[in-house]
Image (cartoon, rainbow, N blue to C red):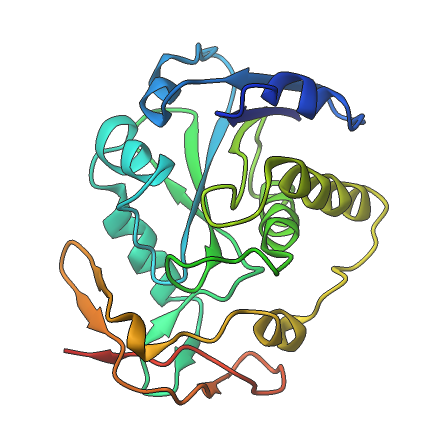
Length: 241
């Protein structure tokens, strides 16, 4: 499988090449995320575009806006639906997709799929997390499943607009890649991933706006109902309006 990384940093191409990869790798430096649509695609290859969204499938900022409104209009509805079927609930019963998990969503274009993975619970600063690692490991697990035949995976660099530097993001992504290639399990389990996330501050006063749903932070409680077999820990304090 060929990995095609996309980023906006001036030195992005050199940055990707400096880490060394076992799979074929190509890097594209673009000025704005909308330029993603101009990256040439081979019609005979099976592609997967990666959507680094939030745990509720919201795709209304950054590269996700281009994926959900330009390349695959309306696909955010399918992402939300797929995330709701993962089987994990917030403290008040709202389904979400945990960080460290990815799902495959078909598009309307032949030979093209979307792999969606959360890089944060909601849009927030994740500077002191390993969320780029978690997301990279998750998409590799999803892409290498037997049901998927992916020739080229288009991966926007993770978390750089959410506080993690480009070099740290790529370092984490390469570490996840190396661990996966060597069959090393993820270094952080579900509980550890939750514990390293920043606690949502209800004083931030922001809301998440989606196509058909709107959530507002109303509680500082951080417990999650977990029916995946992991030990319950801190979760997402949200309530539907």
